[in-house]
Length: 454
Image (cartoon, rainbow, N blue to C red; front, side, top):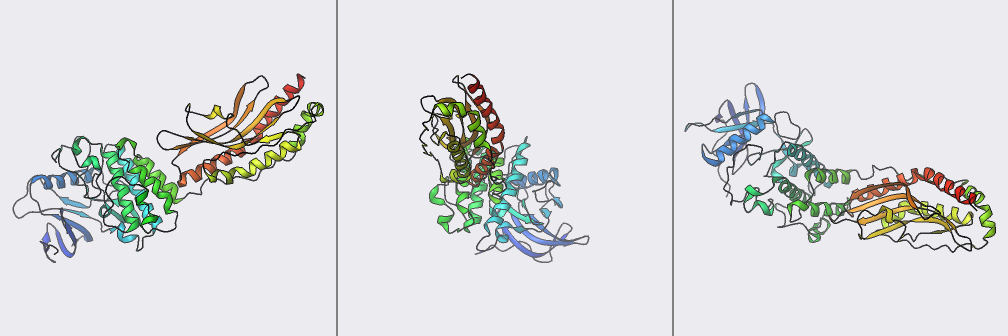
């Protein structure tokens, strides 16, 4: 049975007259209120006149006062929080009337809208973390929409520099069902930053699947959004982000800034430039002309060996046009091409012994009089210890004296199977294509040096 409100319509709280009851919770009642110079506000009345909860209320008022005008934080319009209250007084706080994010995303939820609001909250929390402020009470009810943007509310548990502890070390701290495991035992010793990431990820899951509470513990593939009724809209690409945000060890979780970044990439995953059509007209004739004397002495053409090692099939789309074009160039020039580059990209490997996969093409020459100059390029994927993937691209040259060097390379670290990986592959493939002419120029210079020594 719902608890009867302490106030009734028409009651006065300080200068305010309450009109419509909005709801109540452990921290007091919320009413729509007016006063002669203000139309309508949300007025939260605190039932406690002393003790820990009243001190938390006073701390919230002090923190909101210092953060007046900060984007992403519910504005403080007015408040009454003296050191001591008389028996007839109550503490109160006035804020703009806002809508819960959970009410604004619809039913069934509009997933991109829910993700956008959570990404806005994450960006705000990342900025607050820079100054040492952490919310510590994140849940769906504390994410509101004001002027079409997400704002954070209810800072009663906010942690900030020099704030004295108000909760015993062994008492759980946070929103029931949303607090990280480390906040359940001696939260005073826990890092509140990773704990906020955990709680916000749990909040997003509840908004997406329309549940009041999330599952216990770290997210796994058993908690996938699609497995809980969220269909389409690339929901599957959010699962790795939620898993990375709720890893058991706080130091293994995404940072709040990375969490916001991954969500924003998911919201606009196709911002990377498309790979432009390649124009290699004349390259075959140029290579054939430079190496014509060697080609005349060596009538045997090498066999074309095509064996592509892929980590994911998504490598194939941005690379297949480049591979096809270079293979055609090689054959027309009297050379061979190969996509088996397992031992060719050691120069791109950043961690000795790490698993790597390759997609690319090499142009070289074999026979009685082989051409000891090779030209190759492609994409390399390397598995990193932190469960990310390092995607690397490059054009490489192998000199006739045995030296190898990279003509150009670039790299990006991403979470596997996310929108960030899609964007990175497209972007790196575009850069690989853009840097082809400069790499070809170095290749031709090496061919001329080799030909001059014959």
